[in-house]
Length: 433
Image 1 (cartoon, rainbow, N blue to C red):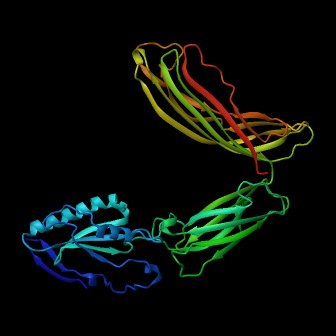
Image 2 (image 1 turned 90 degrees about the horizontal axis):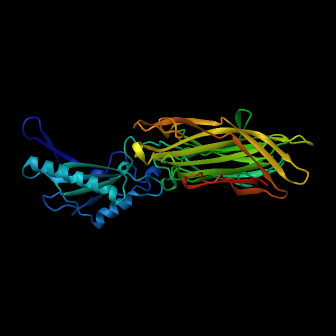
Image 3 (image 1 turned 45 degrees about the vertical axis):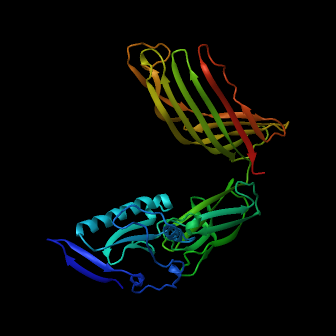
């Protein structure tokens, strides 16, 4: 145990003197073989980190080994360094020395492999000269995050399925530090698989693991879902894991019972025009859509889906009275719902037409001369114009037997007086076969 002595140095000043040894870490009530602390390294005393009366830290092998021992596979690194300076001589000096040594050690530890939240450093005045190292969770240091999930399935996510098909889902959950769980683990208590639809979710199968939970135990659960008769166009399964204090994480596994497409669209330009404005713009759109009804005869099938639109723009005026006026790079993004039609031609071709809602993104400031780039006026009043990027959808045709499309966009050539480059391309593929 600590043997504590104290004496007052001057008015109102209390200096604590501790004769500290490894016995100081025999904490009352501590069970060294309890499951929660089974992997806790033993405390150690480091010597030789500082020369007498100096605060310059030496990176010794002993220090590196102590840091390495803080990294355990299951638990996050939690280590406390206590700098001990003998209380001999001038109290002002040894208090200042202890504080300087603690500061030097705290500054060096992040460079040696410990993040700021993974260690604590303090100091005491004692009967030895060294650094005491103890390993344990900090107080309070609770489980602050959900288990980490890894979900796989047979058939794979995004596949085409039909009534009666079996979807085998494997759910792996862990609260081990090495698997990405950074706070103190409480352990995986429950795993379940649910099917989502009709505004809610229904559990298909699950497992509750007995308490007390095992913080370091990786859990694996396998469940099978049978696609029902007359299924929805999308079969949406949700894998859910919950730890012992109630934190949940989930991951969706989506399957299609109808034709399904996905793809990307990109348009880019980097141009300086005849009005001495240099502008850069990039539009990038990801989309995903599927049939919601079957076409009959000349009546096309209906499509629904979603798109994510990203527009990045910047510009600079490079000549005349507004030279140097710069509009910094700006990115806006939004989600849009897709609706449209697909027509399967008698010759095997496919014609698809889609419309996006909303088609206008957030307003941004575009670089400009007094609100117009067509007829600039040179009075030094350079400003930007409020614009909105518009993307209303697209259409394309697949030839007979073609299940994907990769082609450049029909692009107008550079106008007279323009220099730079511009291009566009679209990628669409039929998935879920």
